[in-house]
Length: 460
Image (cartoon, rainbow, N blue to C red; front, side, top):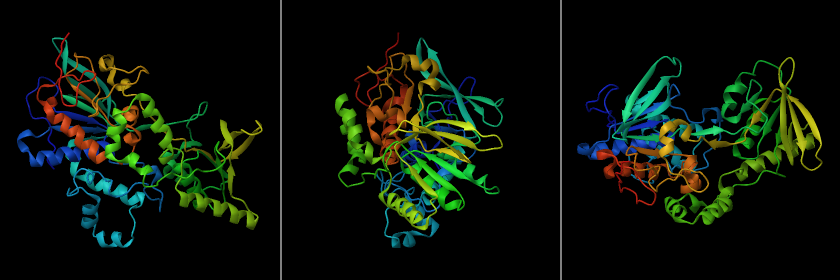
């Protein structure tokens, strides 16, 4: 493993690093791999990088690793293949090392289970334990100024289990890959009996030793349908009520032409398009990803609901054209969900063991962590960060340190794949390439309109 920590002299907070990545999910894991592969090929221009991760070990949506649930993305869109099919970090190489390559091929599928793909991620992450500080959360990014120009950033972090354990790392560039924040309906708060689906497996496991009445699952997307199916299957004595505002679950558009929206070339097309075209593309193709469900799962749930009608015991209830408006605690345990029928406007209540909010995620605003640096970041007419094609935030000339973003904060500039796995391999190569085009050598701010890789050093 050849991603290197900083090894140059520094005055106070350790060696200066070329890059500090905040968060170590699949996005920054893919970047670590791209850097590692560059360093092995080009040791003379090796990038010195380290990462911070608040979890105690690598983990990706572990609360939704439901047995049998498959990926909605081809295994070929792993962390490397779209950039380098011969990489030793490919899913196929993982299968070979695990002794399952022939067995996987015999399945005749492009879609491994989510459990297996998570194991692949862990297998890759195991190569980078020496450059990832697990159990540490970045709490502040402080500009290091020289004659009014920020050449470096001090990354302040604290131990998750010991907040008194504080440290500072100085770097020439940062990349934020902190993932998404659970979206919770207005007026509803998470609690002992109100869960986001990201915690489904953890929280539901706590209920195995008690009698059950009912679960309410809110949402119309893939995670909502999977949560309803899992609870219905796991708790055979319970009623599962699926609540959503649509008339029924909508199938995901995974047709070949629509899937081109996930191609690396589509990012270029989206980035260069006028703002109205960008919005139109997001509207047109939202049904490839948002609030949609795999067709086979829809059919499975429908068959289940129908057979229960035949048998006279309906445990799976589809409460369509409805909305959750409030959740109240029930004395003695459990929750009371207040549901409003959108058709009649009438409210009714459901007492339940828990309300599961499969209501999606929203991108965290990176400016909350950027602090003073955010004041030097350029924004568009709608107040959103301006981001160059290489995923670097455009700044004033007073910032030479590089600020890179991975994830939902770039959807308005880079398109629908920003929050998905589809282009991680290519994106990580683009960020690595940007760092190598001189950003590491002498900094330089990126002003609006400057082409990728062109550095603008402008003080004052």
